[in-house]
Amino acid sequence: MSVSESVKPLFAQIDKLKPEYVNRLAQAVAIPSVSSDESLRPQVFAMADFLKKQLESLGAEDIQLRDLGTQPPPVSDPKLQLPPIVLARFGKNPAKKTVLVYGHYDVQPALLEDGWNSDPFKLVEKDGKLYGRGSTDDKGPVMGWLNAVEAHNKAGIELPVNLVCCFEGMEESGSLGLDELVAQEADKYFKGVDTVCISDNYWLGTKKPVLTYGLRGCSYYQITVSGPGADLHSGIFGGVIHEPMTDLFNVMSKLVDTQGNIQIPGVNEMVAPLTEKEEKLYEKIDFDVDELNLASGSNTAIYQDKKNILMHRWRYPSLSLHGIEGAFSGGGAKTVIPAKVVGKFSIRTVPDMDPRKLDEYVFKFCKEKFAELKSPNSFNVELIHDGNYWVSDPFNEAFTAARKATQLVWNVDPDLTREGGSIPITLTFEEQLKTDVLLLPMGKGDDGAHSINEKIDVANYLEGVKTLSAYLHYYAAGKDSE
Ligand SMILES: C[C@H](N)C(=O)N[C@@H](Cc1c[nH]cn1)C(=O)O
Ligand SMILES: [Zn+2]
Ligand SMILES: [Zn+2]
Image (spheres, helix red, strand yellow):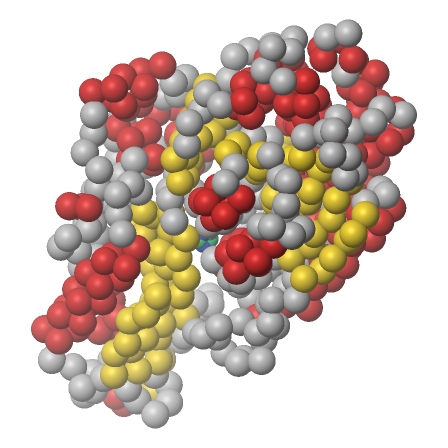
């Protein structure tokens, strides 16, 4: 029987299980597992326990919560524990292929007062969409893998592959500790893995599914400026002392211009030149500036043409300013001079940028710009975390299986895309396990990952479970399967 025929009862089961799937996602979203907020670290641990219980109830074997020790500096609490890596497996049949699925159970911060229409940690279903922090990034897709196993169990259909799960709780904060674990377990827990599938990114737009073969890397920095012994009255000290915030603003404002051009010497020179072959690839992609505007909820695009938008998202670096710790940020008009401020920015990296050279250029530039201010305040610039870029071959066996699965579920040939975001562990899996990695996204380009009112469409959540399941079946059946 063809794969397309054999998965029909599985697809019917997936449709029937919608209430259970939504409930599973609601339980996951209700745990505010924000990895970047030290005070919420117990919630990240609670999320790992939730996954453990879910995996147990679905019949997973060899479930392990792997301790990664304490979080390295910079960190406020030197005893802060890293959340565990959750490992589990379904099946260990040597006659079957083995697929490792990776996802993350931590999320970005979210506060109602940021502008959410509802509590970010309460899943709300409205107009065919499921709103809540992590719904698309990445609790929806992680639940998607569990949902796929549940559908197989309930339909009485054997999983066509051995499934190894690797779920981490620090992806949004640099995947600390995971590189080492993957290296340690390459010949142990991960022995025999044939391919890796990651569902942790999004379609490019809102209409067409995609398969993704590239990611940018991310190097995240912080600049600390401090001076006064305490926060001060600006009426008493304004104009008479060097203010840390003024120094910080000066340095941060020199990093990038308003057209997105990075101003740090040496950075742009590391970028791989554009080839004619690559240039042609952009023509085929289904996307335009309207899709970008829809996703950003604005008309603020720097480039109006598809090629430039895609190149600047996928193959050129970008520098973003994220925030200032220690600065007054509430409502009202507090007349304070902050004593210590920490500015945060990151650089998305691309082939052929060398992260260590990048650090060198960033540190040198920031120090020079601060020195020009001739300020007596103290200044420090440091790397918080980094993760490398990744580009792969989109025509291997795993991509072929994913293309067939997408065609079956969505009735359309997926676009082959790269992603502007980062998943730090991707290259490590490829290098350490010596396997291919496929990125098979569930959500749409307008899902608002990292933003307010993050959502996943119900259709993407359900059809996504079908796509992940069908992918496993096509991959198991080999490249000539139908
Ligand atoms: C693409 C993925 N879903 C994601 O959001 N990744 C984060 C990872 C990160 C955080 N700091 C550095 N990398 C991202 O791209 O921001
Ligand atoms: Zn993610
Ligand atoms: Zn994310």
